Length: 159
Image (tube, rainbow, N blue to C red; front, side, top):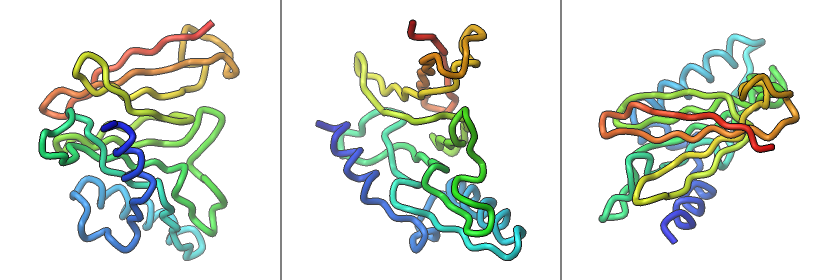
């Protein structure tokens, strides 16, 4: 139920007009992308629904508060650089902010789940990152965070 609520909140969060309300690391990511876009023929950045979402990366808070943020560049477009200009066959940059620490990875998609009371972020990544498999091979990475915001991960191939 909590995961569904988080997905609904993530789907509804629109950040462009709320930048001043974002935590500093999240705002800095958006500022960097905005500057990058402006430097490309004076472009403008379109931060779409799903680009920035509060997520319980450090666990589900009993008061229902989020403990982290996800910035997903799949939903951030610069009009002069083309759709998803930072993306490729390996996916798009996804930034995870937990306890003020930023972890960035390249992924085709992500999903938050809970296992044994711990929050686990699952990333679909390029097959070449798992045991030298091909790009078409299903490959996943699992991330968890400690209370200091440091991420730990493992990558695996699905055969």
